Every structure is written in structure tokens, then in C-alpha cells.
Length: 276
Image 1 (cartoon, rainbow, N blue to C red):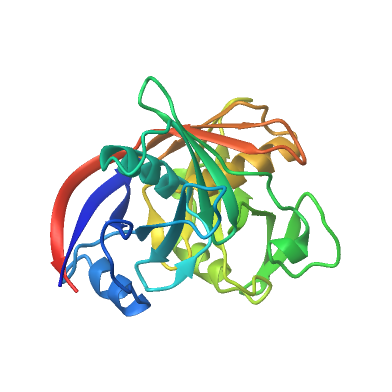
Image 2 (image 1 turned 90 degrees about the horizontal axis):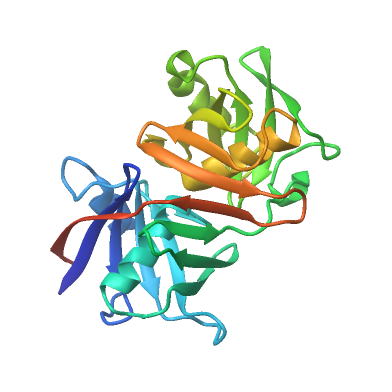
């Protein structure tokens, strides 16, 4: 059977988006892995699947597969593309869209200027909720990697993140340290790793090594986690403007227990069909 799909990106973080509301198919991890290959497939960071909700109080169900076939809980840049997709495909006419994800319900708002704001919910900071192995919650933790210690913050935005402050993201050891922390035993579900350079109280630069995908052009949940870590440790104040390799995101957070609001663009690249 042929499946229609849309290729999209949010600041260069790219996605294959499938509508399984008007189409019907059973997508397996092997399909995501085959389609995600940039040489023999379509190529993407994540596969996004739009499904009917299981909860009558929400509009859609949102599933996410990495290019390696692993299913993950959340993707912030993908959420913005999700909102643009369901509007463009006329699956909804709402400007506020409630979406069910593996990690809980999020709300998407399409603004009049075309930017999309996502209520990502409150960050989870307790080690057991991230999950991260530590005796107690702290602003930062020391983790041993190859016989030396690195200091990092640990935050969950529905998926686990480690945030390291660096002097310069251009020279940060993203490809050396990223995969080692991704698979570190203290992160039992693996982890996304953000390298944060603070420019001033409201501006910073960020590169992210994503679990199952490697370094991406942008990571929405990584930007949220980095902003939370920076605000908690007194480095920055909300709102935070984060410059990623693919572009800029605005993050607002009023403090513990309050939701993180992420605002940025979503772009359609092309439409296609693939045989299942």
C-alpha cells in the first residue's frame, strides 16, 4: 500500500509526518529505521505520527520514532510541526490544539504571525522522574566519564536531558562527550545532552546531542531543558532566547511547578508517497 507523508522541519530538526487519521497502517520500529536512513530512505531525525486520540478531552494522539527506530516520549520541534501539519491538512480548524503524547498532554497554539507556541508542561526535576540515578535532587550533579568528572544539570521535559555549561559551543566536545553521556549508566533510559553557552541574562547558544539521532540542527525539548537549568542556577532570566544551529527559539518559564512555553517556526518542505 502507498502512504502519503509530509517532510517538515523546525529550525532544521527534520521530520517525516504521517497522517494515520485519514489513512490506516500499522507502523513498526523497523519502518522508522528504514525510512530514516538518509542514503536509502527519506531521511529524518524523527518520524511523527498523527493518530486519533484515546482520550475524548484531547484532539489527537502524537507518537514519535527516532531514526534508529526507538520510540520516544516527546519532541518539541516536532510538536510545532505537528500543529502546522494538522491545520494544513484540515484535520482541525482549532488554533489551540490539545495533544496526547507518551509523556502526557501538551497544548499547541498557532499564533497570528505563524509562529507556534507549545505548552510543554512543568519540567520534572526529581531524579526518579527524569530518570537519573542520584541520592537527592540538586541543581547540578557530578558524573564520571572516562575517569574524569563533568558537571551537569538533569531535567525531564517528558524526555530526559543533561545540560552542560560550556564557554563556547563551537569548540564544545559534542561528538566526543555526547554519545558517552547518552549511554551513561546513571541515565537508565539514555539521555539527550545539551551544551549551553550563556551570552547574557536573556540570550544563549545551544548544541544538542539527541539520543537515537546524534547531533541535530535544533532540539525543542533540549532548548526547554537548557533554559530551565540556566534559570534555576541563576545564570539567566525568563524569557530566554536560544540560538541553535538551525535558528532561534524563545523559551518562557516562571519557575518550579509552572509550565515551559516554547515558541518558534514550523516549515513544510515537500509531500510524498512511500510504499509500506
